[in-house]
Structures are given as structure tokens and as C-alpha cells.
Amino acid sequence: MPHPREHIQQFLKLEINDEPIAYRIQDSETFEGYTRHRISYTGLEGDDIPAYLLIPDGEGRFPAVLALHQHA
Image: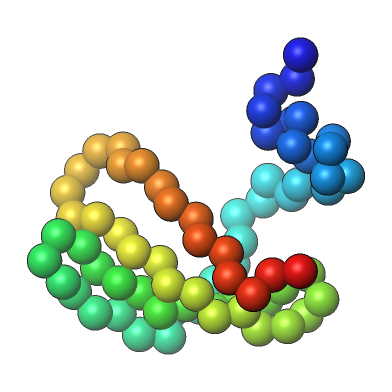
């Protein structure tokens, strides 16, 4: 049985690119326990996609959450 990521990729017929996404930091704000960066990056169709990137304070590995809105 394929790895869950590969299974989803095959089911949705997606080609996943593992290269890092280049993004631009528009501004940053520090809060208790994390820093919030307002970023943007270029989508596959050349459109500018705004997003927030929240980085927790401290060292180590942290869980990640991805929330997608207004997607097709």
C-alpha cells in the first residue's frame, strides 16, 4: 500500500513538487508565544497568493496546521 501522501496524490491525479516555495514577507508581528508573518507567494497560474505564516517561539519540532480557504 502506498504512503498516505502518495495515495492522495494518485487519487487526485496531482503532481507534487517537493521544492521549497519562495515567498515574500510583507510584514511581521510578535505575539505571546509566536510570530505572525503576513506573506505572499506566486501560485501555479502566476497569481499572487496572500497567506499567514505563524512560527512558534522556542526550539524543536512543532505540529503544523494548514487551512485552505477559497480554493477550487
